[in-house]
Image 1: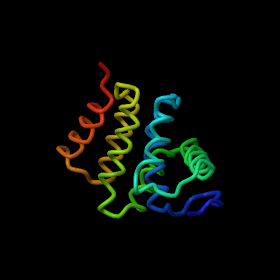
Image 2: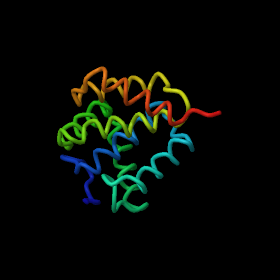
Image 3: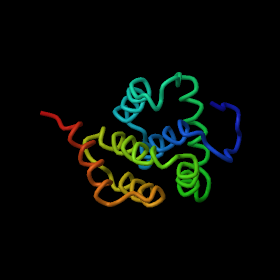
Image 4: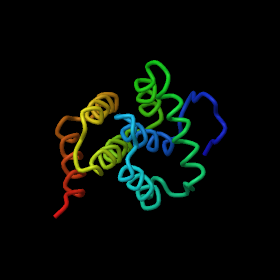
Length: 143
């Protein structure tokens, strides 16, 4: 895992997964406590993110934020994510982003727009995309 890269030329697969989660959380310009908590729990739990510590996660989130703040930042982040991910992790990236979006119990318009852009970049089938979103939403339902 790299940690000192002022401008990213290429992401590792783990970095790409983190960028997908951070970008959807930041889509509405405000990362909620629920979104932050969900990102942290997935980083601790998921095999694809094994070995990430809090300091590294924080640095990567900040790096992602720097790119997002630039003109065309969202599109650049999507390109970086797509370039970094092998085919077998593309659905994983989308599923993680959908999880973060669903953690606030509703997909906001800006989150939906990012998810659509991400799905397009990842070349995900519409049925797969819908299934991933619905399963994420179902996991966050409250009684």
